[in-house]
Length: 172
Image 1 (cartoon, rainbow, N blue to C red):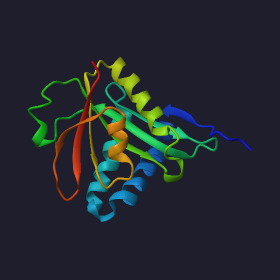
Image 2: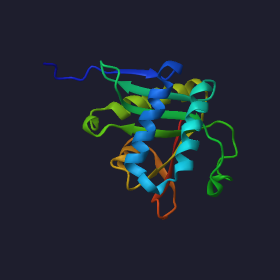
Image 3: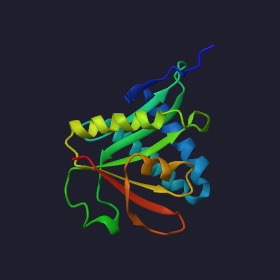
Image 4: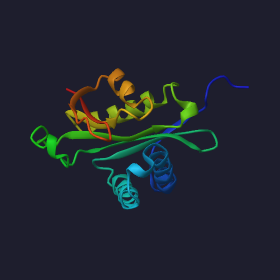
């Protein structure tokens, strides 16, 4: 019996696109349930496909077991300046957004999210991104403490019903 997990980490290509999108949607439903409408889930599914296809500015990374079961995922993309309260902060075009970071519950606290974030850091460096932005929610298990531990700083706490907190980390 092995003590350590045998995991593979890879950038998502078309061969894992559907499996990755299905995994993310499953995680969203688990954590957000009815906080997100059915139409929002559909938009999310479509947007993930666009992000996966545009490899020039974006990447999806996954952690796989030996049986090719996805147990973790993360995305990095060019930030689209869509959040009104942050539009004056991010007028540059070289800001990366980290998103969709989920690790299956029984695999948490084993360094998987850190390894996935490391892949995003490499990608961000190659693309010359200056900062990484993300938003998380206090109700997500382990989310906020993890990002804080990884060096992300709060830039806006919305104190809203979704408990949204915006964070960033400089890469320069």
